[in-house]
Amino acid sequence: MVTIAAVAGSLRTESYTRLALDRALDAAEATGADTELLDLRAFDLPILNPDADDQGDAAAFTRRVREADAVLLGSPVYHGSYSGALKNALDHCGFDEFEGTTVGLLGVAGGAFPITALEHLRSVCRALDAWVLPHQAAIPRASSAFADGRLTDDTLAERVATLGRRIVEYATIEANPSTFESDRNVGG
Image (cartoon, rainbow, N blue to C red; front, side, top):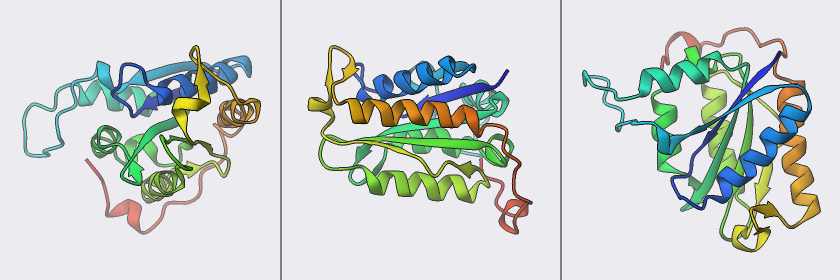
């Protein structure tokens, strides 16, 4: 059975990102996957300092990412990019966690479409030799896109559900051969 891990890059208690990832994970489960939401609020992930002896829960976090067949990354938009919490979590990861792994992207914005945040995440994942799904989910004007914990727009809800189905469908896609960068950019 395929396993999908979703990393929620929002630290807000009432997180639209987490709600949207839950919808994607529901669709992944309906497609036959085992799923797990990795809520960054549940991990002690200090700012990455490779020289520090204490990396908090980094080993537990990276192990769970590494053990997944595919990963969904969800983030709110902050200043046109993805969250610092997600950036720090990804800094603790490297090729061991992402090389050859299928990754799906979800961005949630308070304003207009979160395209730049998704582009930035796509670049990071590509640098780690992940296989990033062409399909992504972008939720603009999040405060009006949800009611009672659910997406109110059927088209957006279907786009998020499609992300969940596609992450399962492509979780075991054959990876590309290693790149020049993979031997030199080992990450955290």
